[in-house]
Structure formats: C-alpha cells, structure tokens
Length: 273
Image (cartoon, rainbow, N blue to C red; front, side):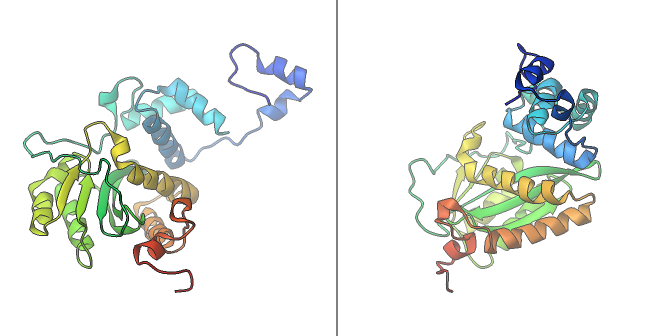
C-alpha cells in the first residue's frame, strides 16, 4: 500500500515501484466545510492531548483521506485558540474553581452491576456558526443510557444545575461522578446532590480515563451525529442532537451490552418487550 507520509521513499518512487499512476493517488476529496474541518481539528487535537500543531494535524487529516491546505489549518487553529505543545491553550471545559471543595474519586475497584448505581456527566464543545456550543450529558454508567442532556451557549453553572434537576425527576443514582470543572463543583450543583443523599465522586485532575465512558459517548456523538449530518446553525445542531439521543437510547446496540440498546439494559427489558 502506498504511504504518502513516508519520509524516506517519495510518492513518485512508491508509485513507480507499484506501477500506479501518481495522479490517482492524490485524487481525494478536497474539504471546504469549515464547521466540519473545525470539528475534525478539535477531535485530532484533543486526542493528542493538545500536543499536535498544524503540521501533524494536517498529516492526520491526510491519513483520514482529507485534503486541507496547511495554511488553512494553521489559520483555523489560531481562530480556535489551539497551539501545539502548549496545553494551556487547550479549549478546556474543565475550568477548576479553587474555592470549591474537591471530592475523592469513588469508582476505583467498584463493580458496577445495575442501573442507577453510578451516573456520570461531562461537557464537550461543538463548533457551529463561528462559535462554540457546549453539550452536556448525564449517563447511567451500567447501561450507557443518556438520562438527561442539554446544549448551552456558555459554561455558566446555572444551566448545568437545571440539567441535573431534570435528571432527578424520575430516578436518582447512588453515586454521581464528574470531573473537577467549576460547573460540577458549584454550590448549586453540589447542594442538589447532597440534598438527594447522592455520594459525590470526582475524577483525578488530568485523568480523562476516570470518565472514559462519557469520553466514548462524545466520540460517538461527533462521529455519528455532528460529522455525519454537518449542522450549519445552532437550530440544526439542536435538532441533530435531539434526534441522536432518541436513536442512541432506543436503537443503538452496544457490544459491551451484549448487543442490547441502552434503554433495554437501563430498564431491564428483554428484546421482545
């Protein structure tokens, strides 16, 4: 297979050795959708733990079959506030408030065997209409069921408190796990958990794997909803996310759930129910 990123053997020489027309190698779609490009850049940048600059992101996009001009990538990264090898430049939804209490991580060695044993929550960002929108979801860890969710223009805590209240209308978990972001350590958020006698668990700082199931949900949201439908407005994004959550909970099977849907596992349903 021909490798356009090989630094030792040129594409021309590889093509000659393989008897392939070089023009066919370069015939790949040129992407011009800025929302799509921005989210692809954010995905690659985040997966590199904020290490990659525009050159490596350009190479990563090539591997995915996407041809985007290096200068355009560099310009878009600047507009997004991203810079390689400088973690402080990361678009960070985990804004810690030093005045708020940080609770210990309670899930180490915990065997999660039932619905509403552990819920977890996080926030991800989606680029649309030349700005970030923030998507929050609360999921049941046992079933991957999305209990509650919402889309916000900002990271202000009040919105996330309302999402938490909505999630507790019909059920409540024994443990609620989040990162150390100010939205989740705010007095309003914490007081609701305490009032409902819910144990509070928080990830270790810088340990995204503590909340790995939500991170996987974000990947699914972006790959199977945002990148697939390519919403261009906030209204379109809201519609895409609403339809995605309904489909995800009720239709999307998971290998880890023995090919059942989150709803079937959350409610203890059989396939025939």
